[in-house]
Picture 1 (cartoon, helix red, strand yellow):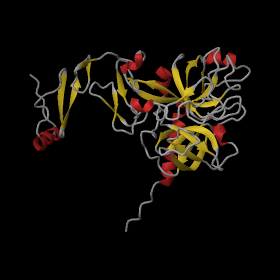
Picture 2 (cartoon, one colour):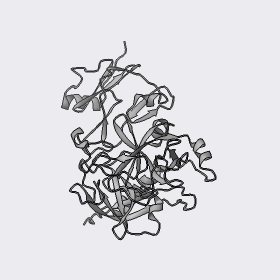
Picture 3 (cartoon, one colour):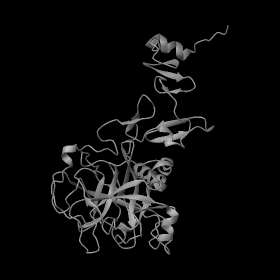
Picture 4 (cartoon, one colour):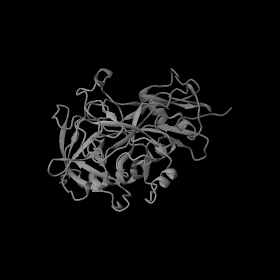
Length: 373
C-alpha cells in the first residue's frame, strides 16, 4: 500500500483554513484543497468547474472547439482549452463566456422597445442599406477634423482608444471624436465629444496600394460608457481566421457615408454584407493588388456597399452572443458598383501592433513615483 504525505503548504492550508474538500463537489474528479477554495482535477473525458460535463471537443477545428470565444489546443493535440476576451468569465462548463459587468465589450444594452427609429423616415445613403436603430452600434465613432467637421468613421475598442483607417489621417493632424451619436446633424443627450491626444498611423501604411490601412486614436479623456457608448470586442487572430473570416459570414457595417449624389447620411445607417472569397475578390478587383491584410465583402449583382465618409468605420459580426470587430471600411471602386466588392482592413492581422502602441503609450505616460528618502 502506497502512502501519500502532505506537503507543508497543504498542512498549513488545512490547519488555518479548514478542508474545503469535505463536501467534495467534484462529480467526476478529485478535489484539490486550496485556501478558502478548492479545484477539481477531472478524470479523462470530463471538464467543467465540477467535472460534471462530458468533453465534446478535443481540438479547435470543429465549431471552434465548442468555445464561445478563444480556443487553444494543447501541444500534443489531445485537448483544448476555452478562454474569454477581457471583461468576460468562463461559466462552470468552461466553454461559455458571460460578461463580468454592464460595460463588457461586444454587448448591446438597449432593450427591444428602444429599437424603434426615433427620427423615422430618414433616407439611408449607405448604398443598399437601411437606417439603423439608436444604440445598436454603441462602438460607432464619428471622427471630426480640426475644423470640427465630419471626417471619417471609427470604432471604440476600449475606454481610451479608437481604431480608424490610416487614409483618414492624411493631411490632418488634429482630431476629435463624437461617441454615442446617431443623428449626425442634431445634438443628442446621448453623445459625447472627446479630444484626441495623439493619432498613430500604421508605420507600413501605403497610400498607393492602401495596404495596412489602419490607425489608432488615443483619447484625451476616457470614454464614459453607457448603453449608447460601449467598446466592441477584438478577437484573437486564431479565432478570427478559424470562425469569423469564413466565406459567406454575414457582417454588419455602419456609417454616415454618402452615395454617388454626394449627400452624407444624417442618421447612422447599416448594411449587411457577406464576406467574399479572397482569390475571387482579387480577380474582380484586377489590376488592383490585394494583400492578405484585407477582407472583401459584398453581394454580386447588388449595389450594397459602404461609401465615402464610411471610411474607418466598423465591420462587425455576431458570434455566440458577442459582437466582434473583423474589419474597418477601407476602399472600393466607386460606390456600389455591381460585382465590385468593398475592401476592408483585416483588423486581427494588427492585434500585435495595437497592443504595442497601447503598451508603449502606457509606459511613457504612467504616473511618476515620488523618490524614496
